[in-house]
Structures are given as C-alpha cells and as structure tokens.
Image (cartoon, rainbow, N blue to C red; front, side, top):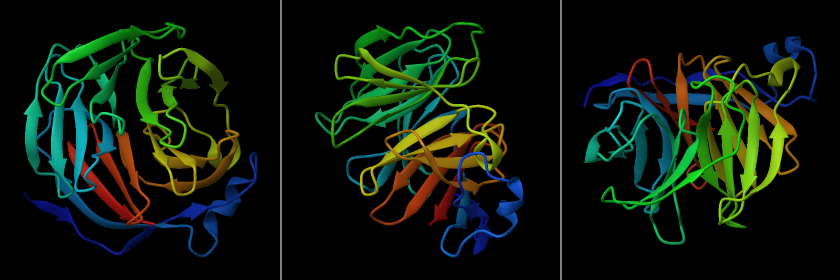
Length: 256
C-alpha cells in the first residue's frame, strides 16, 4: 500500500452562525481544524460512501460501478474483502450495530438495500424522494445509534436530509439550504457521531464538511480541499475522520 501523503497539515475549520460572512473562514477559532495525517491509494474503482466497522479497526466502502458491491478496508486503505453483488449505482454505506449487516443506498434507483456481510441482499426498499435527475439521488446513509433511526442524504435538486425509522418509513424531510460558510453545493456522504450526537455531512462540490446538531442547525465547518470527496466516516473515540475520494480512489485520514 503506497502512502501518498503524511503531513501535519492544518485545514481551516470554523464555528459561526448560519449565514455568517465567509471572511470568518480566514481566522478559525483554536481547536476547530482538521490535521491531515495520511492519504492512501485504495484498490477500489469509484469509491463512494464510507463507514466505520463494528470492530473499530476496519472501514467499509462501496463502488458505484454496477455489480462491484462493497469493500472492507483497513484504516490504511488495504482491501481486506471484496463483496460483489447485484447493484446499479451504490453510493452510501453504514454498518448496523443491531445485527452487523450493512445498509447501502442506490442513487439512481432511489432504494435502500440491507445486505449481509457476504453480499446476500435481505431487502430492497424504495425511498420516496423527488427524481428530477437520475444522478441527483441518494448519496449517503448513517444510523443514529442512540435511537436506531436512519439518516439519508439526497445529493441535490433538491438537497435533502431524510430521517427514517427502522421500517424505513420517512419521519422527517429536511431541506438543506445553509448559507455563508456553511453553504454546500451538494450532499455527498453522512456519518453519525454518537459522542457529540451530531451529523457530519461531506460535500464534494464545496470541498467541505459541515457538522450539524439534531435540530439540523450547522455548528461548524471544515474545509477539506478534496476533489470528489464522496464518503465520510467519523471515529469520535480516536478523534479521526476518514474520507474517500471518488475521482482519485484515495482514502484521506484526518485528526480533529
């Protein structure tokens, strides 16, 4: 595994009110930054979506190439397992703490799939979101481990955050139209932080991560600079953030 970067590079982050001036990004408050620790090549074509595994040691990602399915990775980006299955355009992934199965989203089909770790599809559920353009659909999924609810992001047209129950019934549909330093051109991935009880959302178009509370208010933002950052996994116990780059097939590792 080739390590591309190992830098104590501080990337700007900030805390500001919604709609605040973008000038505040020039002077981030102390402690609100990401330190880029490493960048790894990963042997996955078009990785899109990322999740921390239950063991705290591995990660899972998906390929949006048809039929390529899921990949289990080390934290250094090495492929441990490849689990192909019948898929069209996978984008997001999360590990279910209740039974250790995986949940993935199909962007163009607007579906949520429950899949075993061996690639057996247990269920396919359609999600009722606007289908204005096929490639502007579901992009990420995570689970609130305190409540068991799912959170799913729809990329854009419109940008939406959906909260669903365990039966995948939509409980809330929240438009994401943040302004100022929190503005996001699209929603590319999502991860739940059980320690702070926050949601981390990555945007590939805006090259930033926005952290929101459970009232869906933006709390802080981090600039990533990643081109096509399409998946995010937060490890609050070790204060690490992982992101995958679709365009470059790379895994980025940050400390926060």
